Image (cartoon, rainbow, N blue to C red):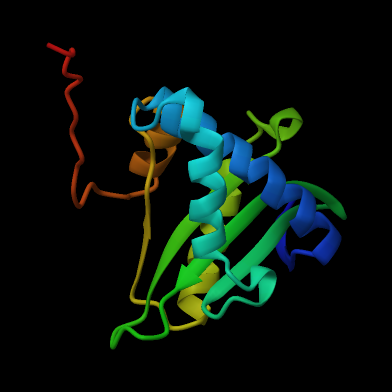
Length: 158
């Protein structure tokens, strides 16, 4: 069972993009960054800014991870063409729920790293929300190190 990367199709992109907007909004609420009331609207706006030209947005590479021809996950990479030193940011990496717990997350992460090496990136970065302990453990065990940390404290209205 070997995972491989394939370009995301336009049909898959449309469904993935809609689901990602909802999921990102949920994660921002769970992390305490956004209120539930405005999360979906903010997520749509942020996604529109990130991918203004959809799949054709420069610097963005969108993949599905497949095993034996079956889609098991998604990968969104961004390599900023304006930077003097190439570095890639993982905007989204996900194993579809029914395929989790089989080591495929680690394989998809390794495939992302291999793609970065093949395309001259000097580093790969990602963001993980603090409540996502499973993802944090995966990234740490794969050698990812924290480079900054956002902290927050809720303030009760006076």
